[in-house]
Image 1 (cartoon, helix red, strand yellow):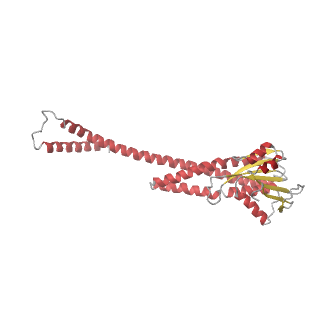
Image 2 (tube, one colour):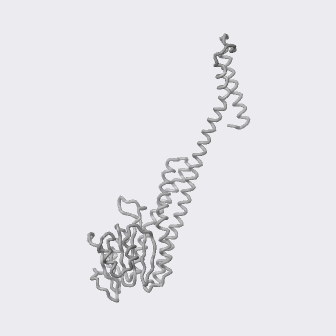
Image 3 (cartoon, one colour):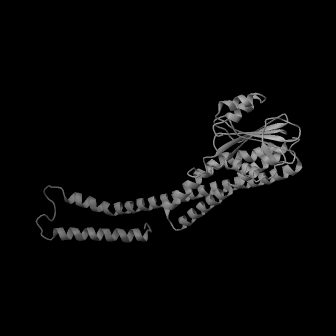
Length: 316
């Protein structure tokens, strides 16, 4: 079935019980068609009775979360974390859903766990009474799976803050960079999903009843919390980055200061040794056997005097 444009096709009766769809529409239940967005037959199927703008959005290679209401239906595009083995969660997968009172059409370019949950519901013969109940299952599963990764990000940033206190800069850089990367990607795709839910709650579709809005409001509250946590994590990672830069600059300044003090101390000695090293007549001590030791003692005295003066001036 993976090679067909219909990956799944089910009919749900008035009680929400599912069976394989015979493609015949009636006035009691609703249909769900899950389709491969990369199959040319999918476009032909969608173009039969769907707006070209909706069709293009359902099949686009790249999408961002959004909602487009039309007549008594809506195009809803969401993003889910990539939770398959060997994949990165931030490589978020899009699911595109057209939903109205009589049908749900979903398309995907890659597999998504939330669809597997729907199939599990069907296999366990759990009823899904209406299209909006179907959508609620999708959103609940999609957003629930995000939470463990946000908790992991919080643990990473807390670990980095502990390493900062212990002055372990290499570990700080690694954890802070990891958090910044994932936070930026998650914010890019999770924040618009908050807007999608807000706009959906404002609609007055017949199939969107009050109890459905309550469930969606809970999902909205969860996504809002996720977005707030991501902004907080971003701010904490930025503070960490600033602290790392401050530590680096402070150490660089300390090293530069030490070299400056050393250069200042040896500057007079460099002048004296340069002066005494010229090969012209009249140089004092040339014929004296103790001149070297006298000059060395003078240099030591100058160094000691400078150290005492610098100490009194609190230069170091």
